Length: 149
Image (cartoon, rainbow, N blue to C red):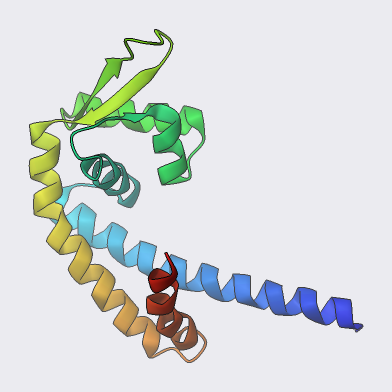
């Protein structure tokens, strides 16, 4: 194995470790949010992203980036959340093709109920991950990554 091959393997191992941590956290969040609030992780992510807009709304493409979903998957997700009365769509006054998405009072209320469940589950999952030798260094690095943002 050459030097380039070693570098590729190191990056690949780092990616596998990151994917393992992500999977552990996402599985725990999915289970808790579904049980307590009837929300999926990605639904929670949308409500959370919209809540951080300080009274503003988001374009569908912004939501797609926030959720790491394709535009069509984002549209289906927004349709489901709109059918549940958790968000609403608004046509852009400046660009009739533009569609904004906004949290409804029901969406805000459900998010407020779900946030403590999310936060406690995340804390628990990260604590669990520190007990796994391969994942512990990555969990330890998270506060430093946040400090850089």
